[in-house]
Length: 385
Image (cartoon, rainbow, N blue to C red; front, side, top):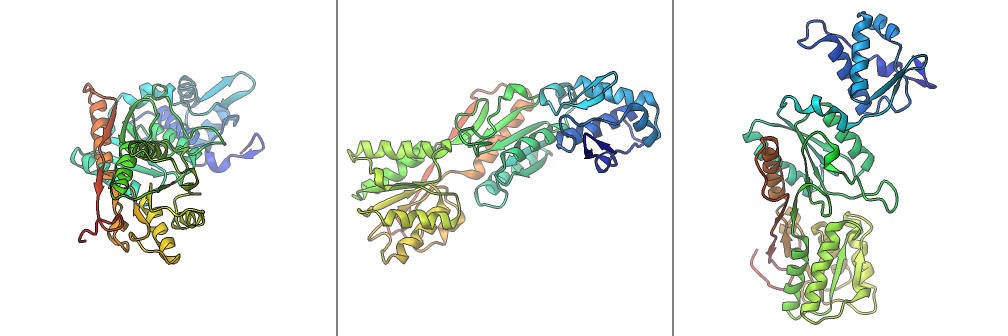
């Protein structure tokens, strides 16, 4: 079936009808078409088959197809005009509120940028720990840091009638200068809870990134180390800007100038990015005496760059990281860091979601968890492993 110069036969071939199912044939058809639209298999501007044509293909009554199409019109997913047929408008989450919230499904979605790195699996672990004890199924989606995928996944989760969605981190841009996937929770028919998204409206759970930057930097300054450099991913991510704010506040408290030439942003989050950022720092005219690196993976890679340059840690350059990932327990020397309680972020976010689903009054819409300074060897404390 070719419509709008696109062969939609593979899409419409997915439609099936089960006469033994509990729900009506019209609801079955409407739900399947809703999924095809939410999953972007049917795109805005695509035309649905004629009522008569689809009825013949599925072997059902004309009135059944007409009822399904009317349901989709009610949810503002299609528009039907005499003579032009039914045209897809797209998925509008705000229009499916009655469908999505009428009956609890005991499913909660989780959208994260990456399910393989050390941070987000810990969040997932925390979410699942709470959910399992409440007999709730968690549907975890990784976006591979693709903002369009995040948007599509949110629509698909709503189309599958999840009770709520937890969205973690990342403000990658759709285009340069545009905040990633910035949402108005009022536009959605189900509760949304955000993790590690400063500046996001609605219910959210954060770690105190400014406190983390302050704690790490004051500890290094307390050792008498100056100057203290700063390495982080792009400060377009609000979390890292907050880390920088804490770093700057610590320098001000110790009456130290801000060393502009020793503030480095990495190209990304990989070991290679951390290694190259530290190489760039070591190439500057003045070497730092210490570095706060706002990601443990970047910090461990940076430590290798320091050693490769023939310098010692912490005798020549001290290092403190951020997050307390497992790798910090195995680095050489052991990495001092700031624990950001990633698993606890997931626990608190899921508990907050349950409060919203159960109609419990929430005292604070934003919950900020404290951080803990973990002292090992890279900062100069020489604690036993």
